[in-house]
Image (cartoon, rainbow over the protein chains, first blue to last red):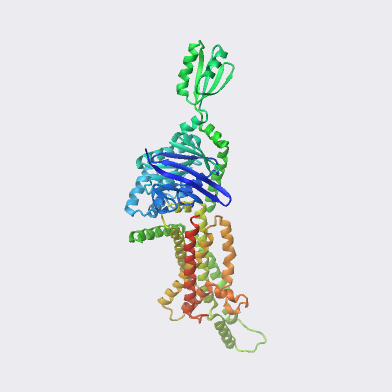
Length: 333
Length: 290
């Protein structure tokens, strides 16, 4: 068994009457990528802020790397790295200056800091831009700088709050390749929030879906997809539709069957063993199959099932918020 | 606290202070613009509103007044000396302008706090192991350093424009002046950073600054002595730290007789600065972790 590196126990945060995070319990295993998925205002960032000791919980607590967040916040801060949703680097300084500043805030001696900064700059491929002011960076470059800044103290756990927010598809893929490379290199545990379902699906070992401050479901992407009734198998038969329907309905593992003419849509939990069995039974009864296909349930459907909303609707408001923040940054100059 | 830990705190304080200062000395335009206002006051207002020349100007002739010009000059000088402690109003005003620039620079220190909160830098800082007061202290120190550099420039400009020092002005007098300016900058920047500690909108911070700057300035002896103020304003002048700073600067550099002894002036400024900076540190513990 791998040990739990983060353990939240009844973690709660209230802002006045609003309960942002409501008695949340979960564990993150050492070395895994754990994703927090939820709509806007679900309590993702508030949870991260509590785990990273920026916010004090109203009730409950959490253990991060063996230290309790309320009792040993300094120990917690030393063992974590945080990449915030917004860009936190100082725009008036160069990338190198930002990294060196972070290093000194973690108490690294100058020589060690220089070495580490060099190494990180190499890793996130910012070598050519590192002596330039951060305000000249593109979105992807800034995000890479943020990640490097979060890694300066060689954290045991890296918190990523919407690491790819507002980036284009290629840049997102690039950012992910850095994250995975870094995780490998430093043997880190990653706790992340995202609203890109396909990212959560692709990269997370386990996902918690959070809505209105409560965790509604935790599991691996596969388990989550399985939990909503599973795969959809579409079969088209050439003859004897009526007995085909009977055969299908009599089988185990069938959650739902719909047919339209000669085509059946079957929901099943376990498509891999269901299809061979179905083929065998249909063949035995002389029914010819013309076409068969399987579609995996998408995280979209999982998400809809548990939160009752589509994340696609949320996206525009996130993008708006991002543009808003950028406007502020520009207004400052 | 171990030696290693105090060294770490000191280092992080220096790095953060340096970060604030870099924003300033790397952009000479901002430095220039922030100096512009007090220099305008000095050059335009100070040189025009010259009380001395009202009386002692070369062409002064009052019709019907049968009195030798020397006597008018004599009376004018005595009145000026009595009111301002010096016969040269420009020098009197210049001392006030040095406090003026300290006040304005200290005020703007609160703005950097607001920006850091807005742009996320503060959030990032809060996840690092540095003690919370270091954040506040780095802002205070950088504001103080900036204020002192700007005050030096104002003092230089005033000297070039004809600030009349007392005949026996010494290096110790200047040191005394800088101590006073340091204390006032420390107290004022702590105050304005404190006001900004929970603010997230720069508009409200600007409003606070605009609300406080002129009242603080006009309720001090920067432009005119306290005893010619209306009686209801005088108590305010006596609690205004700018009054005490001006009093020290004028006593040490111009050789005026002060409204208080230097001891009282320093005592007041020391209490002002230490009170506000300790409150600032206490509040940073309390409010920087919500």
